[in-house]
Image (cartoon, rainbow, N blue to C red; front, side):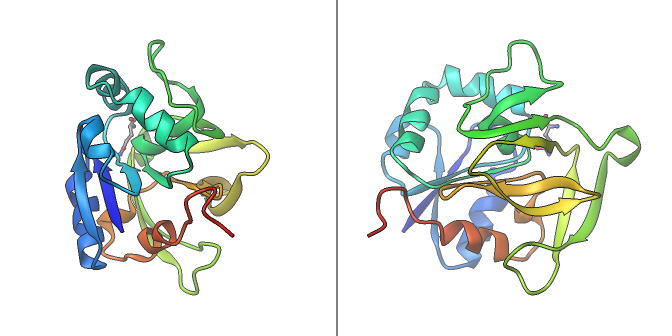
Length: 194
Ligand code: GLN
């Protein structure tokens, strides 16, 4: 299995390292040619308005949307979650999300006082709490049908997904704990079951 990490901007190096420590080959993805070499993709944290703009500048928007429609598993963390959302609140007017998952996301939703924090969170399917790092994190305000909630902080949804899309408000790649990456690796491409 070959994982790709979108490497246009943001915290992609830590994601590559997280996969390497799980013994999985991970590739930095910058072009449609790179995308063609991988089986699943991570959109990392960073700055969602910048990532969104760079998707267009690098001709990556349509190829990624096609891969998602074809059922390729995809994992968005923090800014990556915003980029994958159907709707973005408190975004920039020209910020265009990929609309890959039926969620409404609010940017920087924990407020200035709690810009960044760490929290042990309970995650559906994990026996022990997961140490999570939140950095100017978004939250998921509403979810559509078929979206499953895996974790909340103060009642707010911070980890959710569908059969092939996983999104996190926090940065699992910064925790030295590979369990959320393993959750992503266990997702099957759509259409491959049975
Ligand atoms: N607040 C950033 C944004 O809106 C996301 C922060 C992050 O990825 N750590 O893009």
